[in-house]
Image: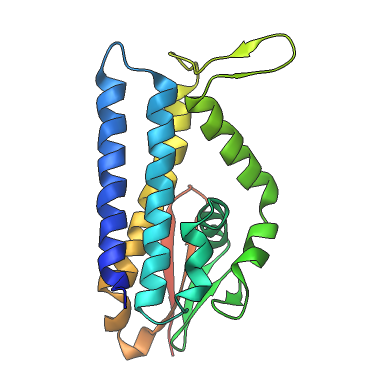
Length: 199
């Protein structure tokens, strides 16, 4: 039987390596912006996969529940959107977007975010592959005009998911019983905070 804690750690390390490689590309004067962005997006998907592995390790969901995470990009992208709508822990149960994790199939989460997922996939394919339409070639851009803004947005997602990863792995079981219900949410400044509900 697979050790999903080990798998989670592999995903975290791979995410860090992908981000480090992207950072190296951005510092190189002949580096290609779109390639760096592609690696940042892959680092984001890897840390999302790591969070799902922790869900299995903590027995919030079964191995079967997360199987599609290893087969498709969609659930990993939907995870972030659901976390922003409320990653919560109440009475020993994890909730995403006010739905208990495990009671709702991943495909239901995915269907709620199809537009975001399609945009994510379109961008990542444009970052790395040559494509064509009827009249022109689409080539990955060496310089992206809004590169710093795009980089900032994807790093925000990566850092948020790494915070969730760290919390689930190392702290969720040690919550004081006086404050064992909490919810993550995005504040008005774009920060990510945790609110405890005192019992």
